[in-house]
Image 1 (cartoon, rainbow, N blue to C red):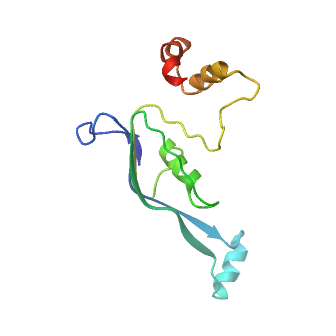
Image 2 (spheres, rainbow, N blue to C red; image 1 turned 90 degrees about the vertical axis):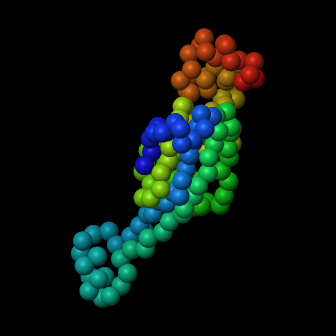
Image 3 (cartoon, rainbow, N blue to C red; image 1 turned 45 degrees about the vertical axis):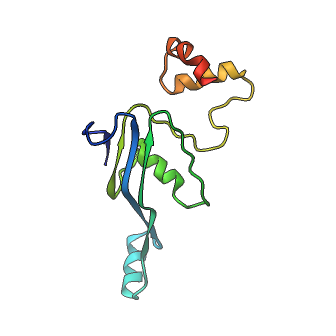
Length: 143
Protein backbone atom coordinates (compact mmCIF):
# COMPACT_ATOMS: atom_id res chain seq x y z
CA UNK A 1 0.00 0.00 0.00
CA UNK A 2 1.35 3.44 -0.90
CA UNK A 3 0.06 6.41 1.03
CA UNK A 4 1.04 9.60 2.74
CA UNK A 5 2.61 8.89 6.09
CA UNK A 6 -0.60 8.14 7.97
CA UNK A 7 0.60 8.60 11.53
CA UNK A 8 3.11 11.44 11.82
CA UNK A 9 3.96 10.34 15.38
CA UNK A 10 5.12 6.90 14.28
CA UNK A 11 7.96 8.29 12.11
CA UNK A 12 10.22 11.31 12.68
CA UNK A 13 9.08 14.43 10.78
CA UNK A 14 12.21 14.30 8.60
CA UNK A 15 11.16 10.93 7.13
CA UNK A 16 10.20 11.07 3.44
CA UNK A 17 9.99 7.42 2.38
CA UNK A 18 9.36 4.31 4.45
CA UNK A 19 9.48 0.91 2.76
CA UNK A 20 8.50 -1.87 5.17
CA UNK A 21 8.77 -5.57 4.29
CA UNK A 22 7.70 -4.95 0.69
CA UNK A 23 7.27 -7.87 -1.68
CA UNK A 24 6.05 -7.79 -5.29
CA UNK A 25 5.46 -11.04 -7.17
CA UNK A 26 4.99 -11.50 -10.91
CA UNK A 27 3.98 -14.54 -12.95
CA UNK A 28 5.91 -15.74 -15.97
CA UNK A 29 3.36 -17.45 -18.18
CA UNK A 30 4.45 -20.10 -20.67
CA UNK A 31 1.24 -20.22 -22.70
CA UNK A 32 -0.84 -17.38 -24.10
CA UNK A 33 -4.18 -18.80 -25.17
CA UNK A 34 -6.84 -20.68 -23.22
CA UNK A 35 -6.33 -23.65 -25.55
CA UNK A 36 -2.55 -23.74 -24.91
CA UNK A 37 -3.07 -23.56 -21.14
CA UNK A 38 -5.72 -26.29 -21.24
CA UNK A 39 -3.54 -28.64 -23.29
CA UNK A 40 -0.50 -27.97 -21.07
CA UNK A 41 -2.49 -28.69 -17.90
CA UNK A 42 -3.91 -31.87 -19.46
CA UNK A 43 -0.34 -32.99 -20.19
CA UNK A 44 0.79 -32.11 -16.65
CA UNK A 45 3.08 -29.30 -17.84
CA UNK A 46 3.73 -26.11 -15.95
CA UNK A 47 1.76 -23.14 -17.24
CA UNK A 48 3.50 -20.45 -15.19
CA UNK A 49 6.22 -19.69 -12.65
CA UNK A 50 5.93 -17.00 -9.96
CA UNK A 51 8.96 -14.94 -8.98
CA UNK A 52 9.55 -12.16 -6.51
CA UNK A 53 10.85 -9.05 -8.26
CA UNK A 54 11.14 -7.40 -4.82
CA UNK A 55 11.39 -9.69 -1.80
CA UNK A 56 10.91 -8.40 1.78
CA UNK A 57 12.69 -5.05 1.28
CA UNK A 58 12.78 -2.45 4.06
CA UNK A 59 14.48 0.95 4.32
CA UNK A 60 13.83 4.57 5.28
CA UNK A 61 14.85 7.74 3.44
CA UNK A 62 15.03 11.02 5.35
CA UNK A 63 14.01 14.36 3.90
CA UNK A 64 16.73 15.77 1.66
CA UNK A 65 18.53 12.44 1.26
CA UNK A 66 19.20 10.90 -2.13
CA UNK A 67 19.54 7.19 -2.68
CA UNK A 68 20.75 5.13 -5.59
CA UNK A 69 19.59 1.68 -6.59
CA UNK A 70 22.17 -0.52 -8.26
CA UNK A 71 21.92 -4.08 -9.44
CA UNK A 72 21.94 -6.44 -12.37
CA UNK A 73 19.23 -6.43 -15.02
CA UNK A 74 16.10 -7.98 -13.58
CA UNK A 75 17.06 -7.38 -9.95
CA UNK A 76 13.95 -5.28 -9.18
CA UNK A 77 15.25 -1.69 -9.31
CA UNK A 78 12.53 -0.30 -11.57
CA UNK A 79 9.88 -2.36 -9.80
CA UNK A 80 10.90 -0.86 -6.46
CA UNK A 81 10.80 2.67 -7.92
CA UNK A 82 7.31 2.11 -9.34
CA UNK A 83 6.17 0.85 -5.92
CA UNK A 84 7.55 3.97 -4.22
CA UNK A 85 6.07 6.24 -6.88
CA UNK A 86 2.65 4.60 -6.39
CA UNK A 87 2.23 3.27 -9.94
CA UNK A 88 2.07 -0.29 -8.59
CA UNK A 89 0.96 -1.65 -5.22
CA UNK A 90 3.06 -4.15 -3.26
CA UNK A 91 1.66 -7.66 -2.71
CA UNK A 92 2.72 -7.42 0.94
CA UNK A 93 4.28 -4.79 3.17
CA UNK A 94 3.76 -1.07 2.81
CA UNK A 95 5.28 1.97 1.14
CA UNK A 96 4.70 5.30 2.86
CA UNK A 97 5.74 8.64 1.37
CA UNK A 98 5.73 12.28 2.39
CA UNK A 99 6.42 15.19 0.03
CA UNK A 100 7.54 15.03 -3.59
CA UNK A 101 9.19 11.83 -4.75
CA UNK A 102 11.02 11.53 -8.08
CA UNK A 103 13.01 8.56 -9.36
CA UNK A 104 15.80 9.06 -11.85
CA UNK A 105 16.27 5.73 -13.55
CA UNK A 106 19.35 6.41 -15.65
CA UNK A 107 22.62 8.19 -14.97
CA UNK A 108 22.27 11.70 -16.31
CA UNK A 109 18.50 11.40 -16.50
CA UNK A 110 16.82 14.78 -16.58
CA UNK A 111 19.83 16.69 -17.88
CA UNK A 112 19.65 18.13 -21.36
CA UNK A 113 23.14 18.37 -22.90
CA UNK A 114 22.27 21.45 -24.98
CA UNK A 115 21.12 23.49 -21.97
CA UNK A 116 23.34 25.35 -19.53
CA UNK A 117 23.66 24.11 -15.96
CA UNK A 118 21.39 26.95 -14.81
CA UNK A 119 18.71 26.09 -17.40
CA UNK A 120 18.89 22.40 -16.44
CA UNK A 121 18.27 23.35 -12.80
CA UNK A 122 15.16 25.33 -13.75
CA UNK A 123 13.93 22.57 -16.08
CA UNK A 124 14.34 19.85 -13.45
CA UNK A 125 12.84 22.01 -10.72
CA UNK A 126 9.75 22.45 -12.92
CA UNK A 127 9.56 18.65 -13.35
CA UNK A 128 9.62 18.38 -9.54
CA UNK A 129 6.73 20.85 -9.38
CA UNK A 130 8.65 23.89 -8.14
CA UNK A 131 7.65 27.33 -9.37
CA UNK A 132 10.24 29.66 -10.87
CA UNK A 133 10.17 31.73 -7.65
CA UNK A 134 10.75 28.62 -5.48
CA UNK A 135 13.66 27.64 -7.72
CA UNK A 136 15.20 31.13 -7.45
CA UNK A 137 14.98 30.90 -3.65
CA UNK A 138 16.69 27.47 -3.62
CA UNK A 139 19.08 27.98 -6.54
CA UNK A 140 22.29 28.33 -4.46
CA UNK A 141 21.50 25.21 -2.42
CA UNK A 142 20.77 23.22 -5.60
CA UNK A 143 23.88 24.45 -7.42
